[in-house]
Image (cartoon, rainbow, N blue to C red):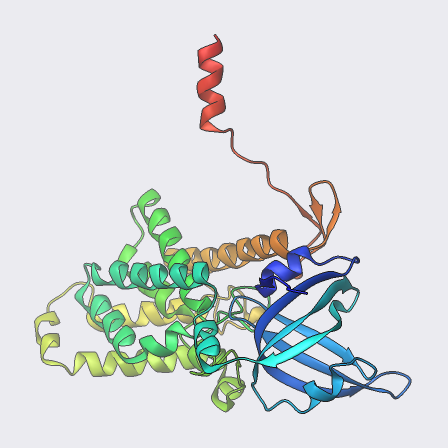
Length: 353
């Protein structure tokens, strides 16, 4: 029986308690042999297709258990069978497994078409918005970062869980934050727009070591530097290093008489990185102490929360009309948002009068 091949996001949205025949193409990001409470073996698989990640459990009596247990690390596979959703998450009944051809895994590595196109457009947006900064110091340090670390940046996640937790997710997060920050700078002209846009680019740059995927897959390995220092400390160190390289370049000679002074610009940029979590209790060594710092903190929080809402609407189980299961760490069940009054409805109402 032919089964349509779905993305993991589509599968999560469609699966319910009634078995449905589907196939997915994924990378196995982890395989762990676990024990049930009754001391029976089961396999816990991490699966990802670039747009979504899931945990799948295969019990000892599952027909695919022996084949899956023998899979090489980080295998690329197609899983087909009857899928359901239960309190453990997605569940696969019966089915088949095959390893993907190299051409299939290469295509899958790019992520779903829509996501790949969005991330490419978002990276272009970041490059364009930073290339037109008026302050030559901030414009130069942004360009240097994208030149040296752009490839790593493009495969980095914004988090391990909760929001933009996918390959390329940090690019999406930063681009949307830049657009929002630029809009707020237009509404509040006293803000230093250049500093704010550059702060958005660098606020999570330490995650290039804390939340970066491998070059050849959807695995996000743990990194000793990320574990011991955290992304805020790493980000401050990275910007200081880039800044030193920049001020030692020939072009820096023309900045001697600029106001504000070059080192003051560096200090304020570092403050944005250091304070963007908003509170010491949430990991910031200092709280926001400038208008740009408080804007950056809230724009970061807003974009993360709205991404959680979007993911919840796409994948959370419905509880009733317009109500969906809670998407942690959001505070309660999700309610479908009220759509805007359609332009066609407005036009029709005027026509009827």
